[in-house]
Amino acid sequence: MMAKFMNVVRTTVKAECHDEFLEHHSKFSKYDGQLSQFLIQTGDYSYCFVAIWESEGDLIKARPVMIEFLNSIRHMMEEISPELGVTDPVSGPVVFER
Image (tube, rainbow, N blue to C red; front, top):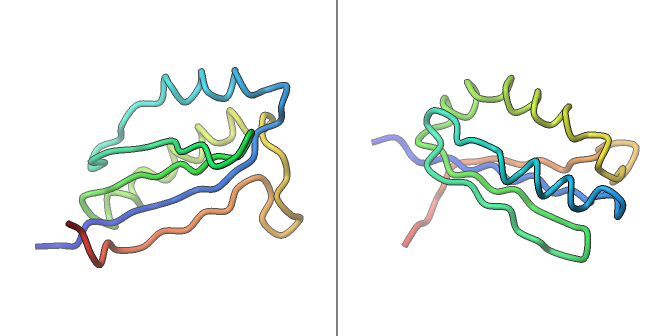
């Protein structure tokens, strides 16, 4: 059995776009191979998007559509740094689950 895979994307929302950002995420659909998704509020305007996938391949297949979604909300987010832009994404295999 292949290991589940996760991706996490950290971002900060512009204060004036906060409600619009949440509305866009409430309409966000699950992708093929995605088991679940979460939006975690980590500060007043800071969030982490977390998704669990059946496999790394499923995440890779969904990337073009996820990037399209990101491009539709990019104007709502603050730049984290010149190197990162408006998101700080990471992903990897699930090594422990209870």
